[in-house]
Structures are given as structure tokens and as C-alpha cells.
Image (cartoon, rainbow over all chains, first blue to last red; front, side, top):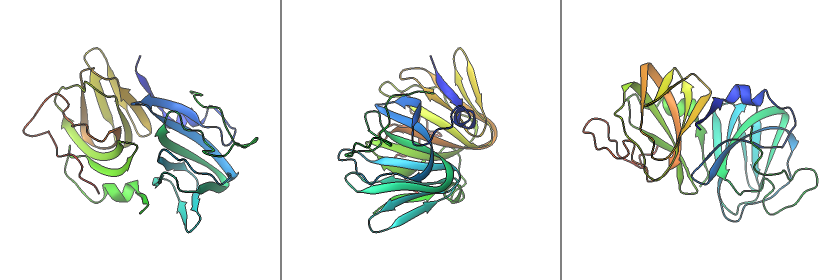
Length: 121
Length: 121
């Protein structure tokens, strides 16, 4: 069973925001795609880094002391333990690389934003 | 020190084929970019999966029993231990996601194709 696909087609399969979908699992990591709009809660991940890459739209990765404002094809790696939040004024499509067990809201549990893990598409 | 960048700009910084460059390191993994043209040697990786994603051009990931012919935004995960080779009739630009210690030619050492690891860009 080979994992393969078309990222654009995968994004076309769903419309909800802030609910990452797994498109590939390898070496204990996952590649996830997510649609975003608005502001995500501040949080951090104690045990891992996470990488965001913009597929479509504009997307901000905000740290307490700086903001990375990203367009298509731009990426940033959030260092472990560093507080951050993500945001987008209009809908954006994002790829995430991180370990398979990472909760999207890190150290925070948020009724609206904490998403189930392991949802494949 | 935040790792960030623009993938298109990173590809513009080099021209050689089959020499992966590291654009991000996280959780023992690396995101590498590589320009390819021609056929790579058959090989496998005993201990890990590797993911290829096409940034630009057309690219084949060939297995002994099938060929994945990929265009921009398409991806495939090569299962561990499975023999494969990559190929492109014309120059293509590829993202690779795999553990940091992976040798590009896997179990094979090839005078032309085996590339140094850990070359960042």
C-alpha cells in the first residue's frame, strides 16, 4: 500500500478550519494539511518542533517577539518549547510536518480549536 | 534562531542535479530540496520511509512493479526496504522529507550519485 496523492485535490475534499488531516505518515512523523482562518490560541509544544509551509493564501506564525508573515512556498519551523500562535486574515491552506502524536494546541486544551489526531484524508 | 525561508528562492540558489540541500531540520528529520534530471540508481533504505513531493516539473518514482508519475503538488512515500529509483526526463524540482541520517543512494554507493549529507541552503 503506497501512500501517494495530489495535495490540491486533498485540500478540495474538506472545508472546515483548524482541523488538520493526515496525508502521509512516515518515520513516526505526519504530513498534515489544514485550512485556517482567524486566530489560533497561543500555545507551545514541549517535546518537538513543527514546520508550517504555505500552500495557498497568506499565513502568520506569531511569536511573542516577532511575526513571520508567509505567502505560498514560504515556511517556518517553530522551535520546541517556544510559544506561538498562527493566524490568517483570509482563508489559507497550510502543510504541517511534525511527529504523529502532536496535539494541534500543544499544552493547551481549547474547546473550539483542539482537534482530533490521526484523521486521514 | 528561527528556520524559515522561501522554497522558490532556495531552488534559485543552485543548479546541480541530484545533490539534496537541507532547508529545515526538525525532530531528527530533514526537509531537503533537490533538482533532478535523468535516472537515479536503483536502491532501497532499510530503516526508513522517504517522502517525495514535486515542486516543479514532472518526476517519476519507479518501483519494480509500478511507476508513480508525479506532477507539481503530487507526492509519494517510499516504504522502508522497497527498491526504487527516481527519474525525470526534463529538469524537475523536488522536496524530500526523511530522517537526517539518510544517504540519498540508500544501500548503494555510487561514484556519481551518492551525495554528501547535511549540506544546508
